[in-house]
Image 1 (cartoon, rainbow, N blue to C red):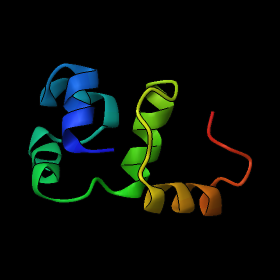
Image 2: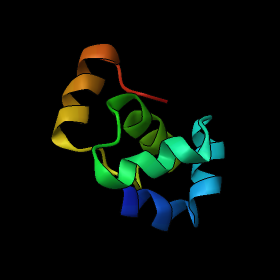
Image 3: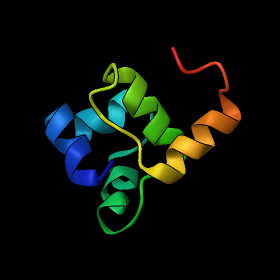
Length: 70
């Protein structure tokens, strides 16, 4: 998942930040880098799977949540 995917789904950075429980500036930093796996997992869960985690995040999710995320 990319920053653009996140913004497109939530509508803007402020809404995405509120949904993920972080500040807007934290979400802005993801424009130039990877979204941390924890937040990719949360965004995927909140979006009911509409947002897909990248391969690294998928591996992290499988390791930390072997029974899946609800």
